[in-house]
Image (cartoon, rainbow over all chains, first blue to last red; front, side, top):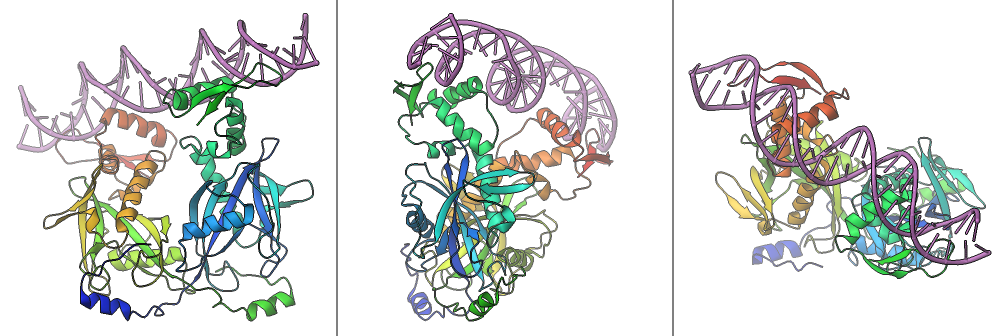
Length: 250
Length: 250
DNA sequence: CCAAAAGTGTTCATAATACACCCATGC
DNA sequence: GCATGGGTGTATTATGAACACTTTTGG
């Protein structure tokens, strides 16, 4: 909360009598595209099955109305994330704001969309207040669009509620573009103080949706992170099949 | 405007009786950071001197309330841009949404910020409805922050209204980061069908705030645009001092 | 010994950077 | 002819991608 300092008595009187209802106001929601990493190294998104109208029964990204005056939009997103997943203090960045009239049939709703990257393990998929069903879906995004699937279900992007197809598409595109020059990938590590280069590579591969060459990946990792002191060695793996891997810590 | 198709009669009845006033609603504005190129190849921003409270007399970026239900946020931004500058159909992209409580002392205002790149010449700096004063300012953004200056005036970023310091900083940072892999620079050309490589270089230099090597710039331009067919030759300059330059067209 | 995973080194193509130098024009 | 800006070429280094090969473990 800023502390605005009145610049004159005239201004104070003006502001105290300001009629806030002059312009019609939209509802504002904070919606979140929550990504995590499946056990097979596949990217997953958390979706909620809508229990009420509109789009009842359809899958949607979690979100909710901003408590206007009580919290910032960022805080609303963090609160929603906590409610849906139990997770706090993870990667949560604003993505884009969607404000087409008619995107919600009830009334004008402007949605500020966020992207969250949550390590599997911290994430407890739980039903929200409304006892909605929440599920993780694997995603495959190619030229034909996005397909969502897991053990029980499979559907295409056009079955999503609202304009959530556009939001999820933008979220995937954004993290794909960002990962090569930002440190986003580290946000999906199970343990940021004990990870191997191969574990990190799996995250890059899931996000970029392509196989990477391990020797070259290692070279870039050592050059961009270890040599610059952003990451340091923290021991060795003790068990496992092949040669023990060095562990790193961020 | 989407056309929502009711999935059942039950849903139609629910939606028609939906109480839109359940959640308190914020005011939403579309604000625009309008950049143009000064005659000396310097980057400029359009600012408005506020005629009313709050921050009366301070300089601010243009913007205004979204006509909820009648236009999208994007349309509101385009409308504002037209009103302030007379310009249509130019580069106008959403930047970020600012929603901290208290950023406007009157009431909760959520501002969706946009970045516009307008060629000098098309731009007619004009007073808005409120007969506010509108002026172009040169900007210098270094480690000490932004300084705004022109023939008559000079002030630092902390003198701006609202949180417009943060918005303008983010806008500058964003176009600086984008220019190397997006085609944004072309948006500032006076004539997109008759421009020289040097003219384009001036735009890059203004945005990046650094001098570029002309031979290397030409090489990259020919490789990335001409060779790929995105840009083609369109004649030669006829007048001027040195060797006539080739003209290109996008 | 052999499979599996980690780690090292080499080669080749491309791109970024820094320049030296030549070309066509106006005055 | 010479200053001015346009344009070409070259050498150096950095980066990215492909891949052969070695090392250390478990079984």
